[in-house]
Length: 56
Image 1 (spheres, rainbow, N blue to C red):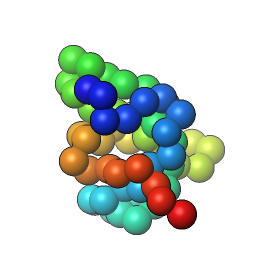
Image 2 (cartoon, rainbow, N blue to C red):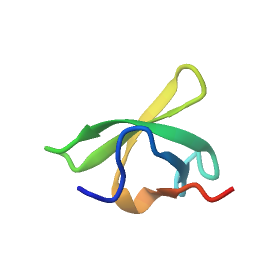
Image 3 (tube, rainbow, N blue to C red):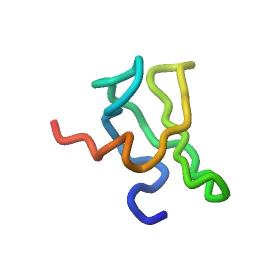
Image 4 (cartoon, rainbow, N blue to C red):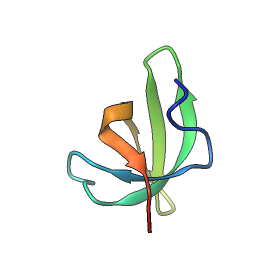
């Protein structure tokens, strides 16, 4: 799981939060997912192919 690291700014590519920008706050290696926080209290786990590094 080297695609992203804690602190990376990413864009969500799928689901209801599609196109939102958030921050990787946790790597759940057992499930191979990343916890991404959008705003103050919205967060969800995503697989590596569901997010990409944000390019402003």
